Length: 363
Image 1 (cartoon, rainbow, N blue to C red):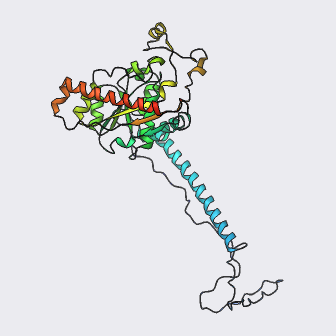
Image 2 (image 1 turned 120 degrees about the vertical axis):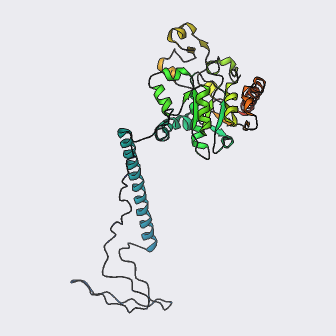
Image 3 (image 1 turned 135 degrees about the horizontal axis):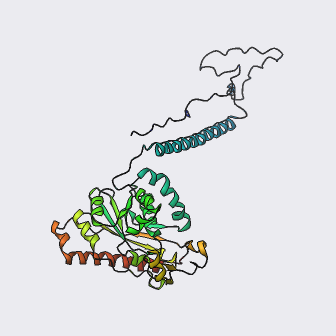
């Protein structure tokens, strides 16, 4: 179904100016025309010569005060018109967006990714948390290629997967090409009501090699956090110590697609929910990989679910190319082990460097 057309407001139509009086500027060299006074008015005095021998220029009709004041007034009027036009365009755009959502005149890809909803709604909801609450500082985002596929591999932490969402905003808002990061998520994400639908709309998909390879071959930027639940649910005493990176499946996927691997290190997420305990029995009853106990949760109830306002740093490292390997390299276990260890060591080393430079957890 074709997109609905947006009819712009007639903001560029000329507005009526101030009424002109019986006086107007004469053309150069033309004789002055006499002005007939209105009934009851005195005849205007003829302009006298100035000290320099030139006749004074009459003021423009409709001008009030000096020419400088009049110019300032015209600039203020233009500013008001521009501001009004901006609001009109926003309202028109919002109405057009709602019309497309109601009529279904929008597109999603085969994975359920809704680019328009992500750009205009989901990113707008996450951006205040990113900019004002966690005050994320991004470094090296230009290491993600401007076009073509790339696999971003990051550490995982924080009890709740907010680090993945903040990394998604970082790529969307700061990459020179404005690219979208397609995150690979655990099965649990797609079993939760509401969350599963929003995850699909935001471009997330199942953490399986088939989906990841299809996205990479289409030229997408794919994000993966190989630590999984072991990383996000580790106790506070083991913060910033990377867990096992699985069996290196992400390396095999990158080799098959021939795309670079971009290591990513995230500092600040470990402290948002300091996990001091794990209620394993309750976690099994609820079907969760862990049930976190923090200094504020569950003791403060819903208030304890509020993350601490830590200061974050997200750094994207130098890409590791994979297009120079032969096609059968994806089946070489020793090569996969070496590349996996190289990526893990690069992320861990960067984490240590960022922690040494950090002044405070919150500033």
